[in-house]
Length: 339
Image (cartoon, rainbow, N blue to C red):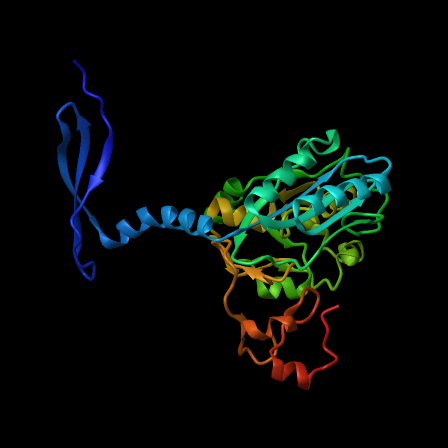
């Protein structure tokens, strides 16, 4: 009779400093747990083994699920849709924001797991949003104070009616393939499509900072791109991908032949590739301010003026859209907004 096999690890607790941890690889047989062969793992490998498990467990311990997602899709009767979504979100106790336009939806949602997941399913019941995908992050408190749904001309403003992200979208590269290019040191241009202060908070190694104060200035800055870039491989990236949905097609219309956008942006790259080749943290558009490569809230932020630490008690000074200044520098530089 064949045995039912199951692989597991057994170990005795021993001090870790400077030692090797011994394990026995076991299987479950008919007579109980049987030792198959002894092995050993050094402490660094042991922690490498446990890190993904710890990150997963730590995420589940925090109470607030944050979702961010967008979809370019043709919408009709946008005002009626706004009212319907506001009612659904309010009934679920959701906080965050939803932007609607004739070109689609851009949503940032937060709340208890069951409420947020239920509202995400509510959204997908609309035929226009059935393929709406979300990026998940976690926090101990809700990063939003209220919930609103607004109608805008664009879900991300660039003021270029000649581009059509619904029918003429950008070519994409997923996080793993982008990492391979970076690992191999391939000759390519990495273009940060975010604002200047976002770049300074964190960016991919070697990425070009366009020093934008508003994304709507991208078409203007595009005019100054070197002619030789038109034959180069270019990868654009932003926080979650939405800005590149317009930046990359616009570049292609201006003769840049080999432009790719990073699928899911920085946040998806953090999730899939643990942030390798990325320096610093990623600014997010809520009261968390920034997340690190583990998609965790950054505990301490650096003042962009004196390079000192901004305490979390001062986090009102780093609201989205303000230059990242500590209390002292804010007093000394009251006229230094980022926008």
